Length: 395
Image 1: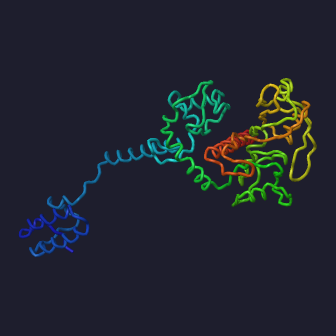
Image 2: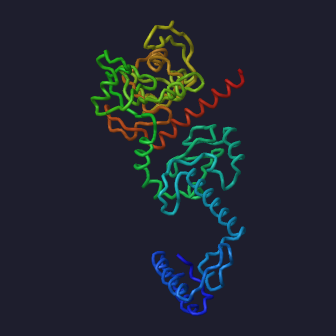
Image 3: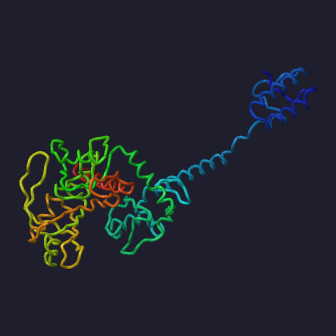
């Protein structure tokens, strides 16, 4: 096919009009108009110049201008800025102003962005000056939930940090249920919390009639992988137990310096005095036998570590709330016995800052929420970082 050239004597004006029309037309129409132009110019006996020769001015309108180096670099800069802004908002856990981002929590050091640099915020957290929901924290990477977690610096509540991180109350609440289910689907592991009833044994041994795995199945949970409890509750204790297929979690939450706090509600057979409560707080000497699936290590006789003990029903009441970290076998029962009393009922209400709040009663279970998954990941990440640092020092 011959290219139309407007310099032909006989068909010049016709081809120019055709070509100008082609410039504004769609590609299919452009092809048809070029064929017409070729016929008109071909009839005039015009031959196109060799390839590489400059086009006449009348045909240059068909060529789109190439971007100058300056305009190209500005496009790249704008794209990079947009990407950085998106990454920042994604890390923050959601977009403001009705955006559709998933609210997964905000890094704790971003709470202080109005008054401190990120490095300064990390130093505040490392120095123990920051608390979340009343508990001291030392991990800058911890994520906090907008409009749910209360952050304090030196005892004073930090306000307005949600808006500074572009999270509105509406976006935080509307994405909650979608966030929980989608994040569980994306995870390679299963994490659930279960309200264990009295009489259920925390073992994966299916030959034990009251084992927790069969009971969990009977309560409607369909596990995709082999799951096992994180720690134990004795047979007569009710309340929160976590189960997971992630083998990292038990080591990260129960071993050595990584042990996580556990909170129990205790009903005692008789009122306890203030002296007895203080003895429990300071620590008492007990003998415990470690529980293992295989083997039986020798018993341990030692003083319990200091713990938090609160009264739930007055100075001469029978109900206490006890928060411990150790987790020795039947520790709460033996501690109460050490001050001359006996436990009538024992119920675990909280473990690793995860509570039974969303569960209705014994036998109920639920996948961990987005906020609870963040807690789990923070515990695992902290343990792995510290373990890696220890190995580096030893090597």
